[in-house]
Length: 426
Image 1 (tube, helix red, strand yellow):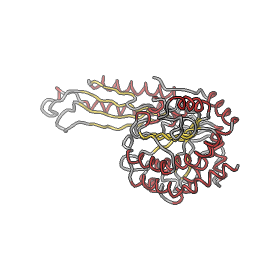
Image 2 (spheres, rainbow, N blue to C red):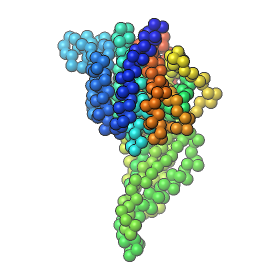
Image 3 (cartoon, rainbow, N blue to C red):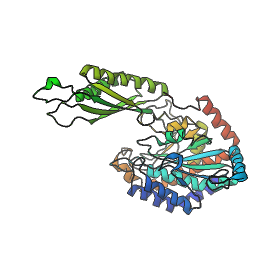
Image 4 (tube, rainbow, N blue to C red):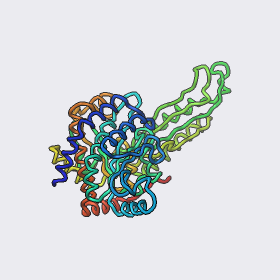
C-alpha cells in the first residue's frame, strides 16, 4: 500500500530525532513517577513537529497525552474548545475510530534503562508522528499516551481508573527484547502480578539481658519468607513467588520490634492470581501466630498487573508490516508459553483490544532485560534499526485499524470472545 511506504519514509526521516531522544533518555534515566525531564523532552519533540502535548494528564504529573483527529489536542474541538465548536468536536470524536499508541519511559533503580523503556518511548513517538497525518487524512483519531511507572507503580491502571481509555477503541506498544528475534503473532506472554507488603510488630527487649520479654518481629519475617519458599513447590509451573526483606531490625542486641518484607505473586490467569494471593496471605498470617507477633498486611500497595491478552487480528497486521521491513516473524509455537515477566499493559489489554509484541535489539541472547548491559544495547546502531522497523510496523497497524472496518470488526470479535472488557475488582 502507498500508505505503508509513506509511513516507512516518515519514520526514516524522523530517525535523527528518535536517535537523539533514545540516547538522551539513556543518559538521564528517571525512575517511576519521577520522569519529569523525560516527559518534558518527549513533549518538546512533539511540539517541534507541530503536535501539542498535555503533560500531567489523568492527574499524574509525569503522564502525557497527545492526540490528532476529531477531539484531539490539536483539534478545534479538543481540550480548551468551547460552545458549538466543542460540541461538534465531541460528536466527530465519538464516531471516529480511535487507536492509542502507548509509551513507557521510566528507568530501573541502579541499572537505568535496562528494560529498554527509552527504546519503547522512541518507537511510540516515531509511530505516532509518522501515522498522525495519515490518520487525520482518513478522518480517524490517534493518541500517544505516555504512561509513567511501569516498573513500580502501575501507571496504566491509574490512567484506566482516571478514564484515560474510555474513548479508546484499540491500543498498542512494542517492547524490546534480547537477541535479534521477534515474538510470534501470538505476541508476548506475561503473568499478572500482585505485590504484598507485610510488616511484623513485636516487642523490643535486650537480646542478651532479657530476651524472654521480647517478641521478635524479624522471626515473623523469616518464618514468613521460609513459608513462602515452601509454598513454591506446590504452585503451578507458570506461577512465580519471590520477595525481599526490607527491614530486619536496628541492632543485633535489640530484639526487633519491627521488621518488614515485600513479596511478588505472579500467575498466568486472573483467577489463579487471586487464589495464589490468598495462599500467600495465609502463610503471612500463620507466621505471626507462630512467632507471637502481629502482621500488618498490605495487598496491592500499587495496582495489580493483569496477564496480557494479545489481540490476534491486530498482531497479525503488525507481523505483516514488520516482515515488509525485512524482519522474520516466527510462526506460533505448538504450545503457547506461559509465565515470566509482568506488565501493566496487561490491564490495558483487558479494557480494549491491544498488542504488545517484542523485537530483538540485535545483542547477545544472554543479555536479557533488567541487566545493566541491556541498557547499553539500546543506543547501538542495531537497536536503532530495530526501533525504526518497529515504529513503522506499529504506525502501519494504527493506520490499518483506523482505515479498515473489517480489521476493526475482527479485533472487536476476538476481544469479546476473550472476555473483554474486564476491569480488576477484588
